Length: 263
Image 1 (spheres, rainbow, N blue to C red):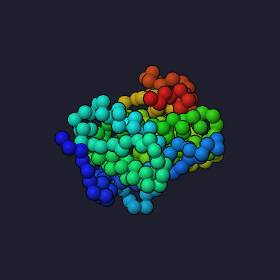
Image 2 (tube, rainbow, N blue to C red):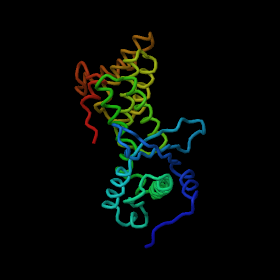
Image 3 (tube, rainbow, N blue to C red):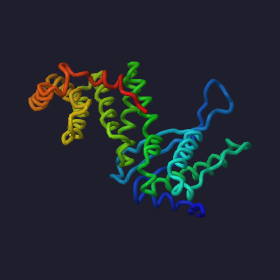
Image 4 (cartoon, rainbow, N blue to C red):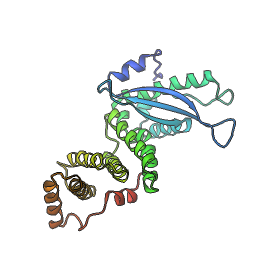
């Protein structure tokens, strides 16, 4: 089977009509005064929603793309046989021409993955987009850098919305927990409560799970602080505790974030 080769611009059209549109901006990252810094590629991810929706951005190195390609090849030999991947050059690896060519190749590579349902829903592809952002946001939250963490949680939330596919059953809840904790620590109880309400909507038709009681407890506390109705959440939390499905008191959202293992 031959490899797919699309004319320039074809991937942009195909992808924007299905799952998501991906544009790539090469960014050089300079650190420690080293003259040949690792090359970062910044991906702007825009889904099929309203045109004024805020896009999400992530930055990845060649090695991140290479790892994704290798993992998918191992799991999906058939579909991956038709998808090409840009090889690393030994010379002139950081010239403007090489960077531009590789950016277009990465755009085609991810566009091809998004166009194949079996690949677009692969956990490794979802992890490629979302997992590093969640890990960085979690680390910053645990060390008390709430303003910096808030920007990453917000980007991770927007990223999951733009992709339009689940990045794991609990990751949207974890993201909302991070947003709620940061808003609360930054003295914005209204936004923190709104995040709790979004999470409770996601949990509405699901069986009790670890996030439910902490979100209910946070919603009750924030509603009380804002002088808003808390009776429904209070009753729901009490019912869980009486049924032995939640401890008294439940862990806080921050405690849950600290203990959550992202893999």
